[in-house]
Image 1 (cartoon, rainbow, N blue to C red):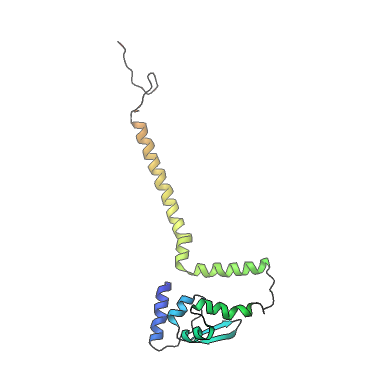
Image 2 (tube, rainbow, N blue to C red; image 1 turned 60 degrees about the vertical axis):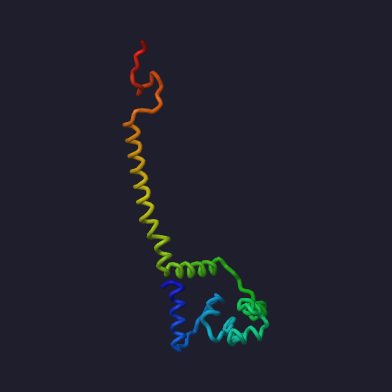
Length: 156
């Protein structure tokens, strides 16, 4: 499914009166889809309301600015974490696994190169072989008198 079709599906569910819990960091999607917005940081609900209520409460118009204003004070209260090579590897592996779940990523990263590169190399190889064969069959356009492939001219 593409992102657009997922957003359309969520919009349809909302319009049919279904409750949808939508978790994202993409504020433009939140503005399009959500009736009630909750800003959560480290499992704590920091702010909640409609878009209009959040704008009035935080004196900002842009939802991203509201998010930063609400979340920023809590960023410094967390204890620092140790970043090790192992943790970076775990995060990298999870991100790679997530990206490989997407069919388009698999196609563009693995399947297309496995099909296209051999076809291109065979195609270019065949084209070069044909061009070399034609070049060998043609008489040269520029000749050197007395050259190996030059016709014999009689000088009177």
